[in-house]
Length: 124
Image 1 (cartoon, rainbow, N blue to C red):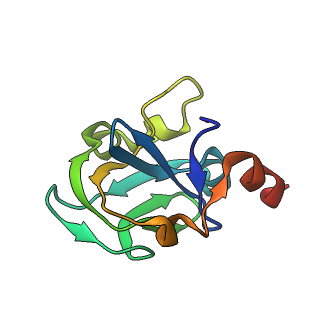
Image 2: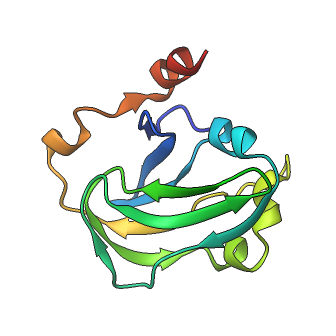
Image 3: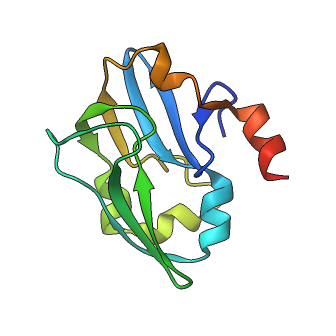
């Protein structure tokens, strides 16, 4: 995982890249879920506010909602994981992001997000 990403206590991450934000779930969350069999993502153009459920992920163990770590508008979805959700469980698979968003989130929205190193401490 990338050291510059910010994480939520519910295991989502946000990573800024060239003014856009990549949103996904952490490796820890993927590990906890077990074999992932289904991912449902929103349509491009959908808008979500911070902490709103935007995706559903199902594994052999459970179904889980995925929450938006910051408010924003979906500009791209990861079709690859929708079509082949099992890729999320593969070690070398890099593109584990769910959606990319545009966001005008202010510092208040980022205030409760954890640096990746703090997040790792939190889950240990």
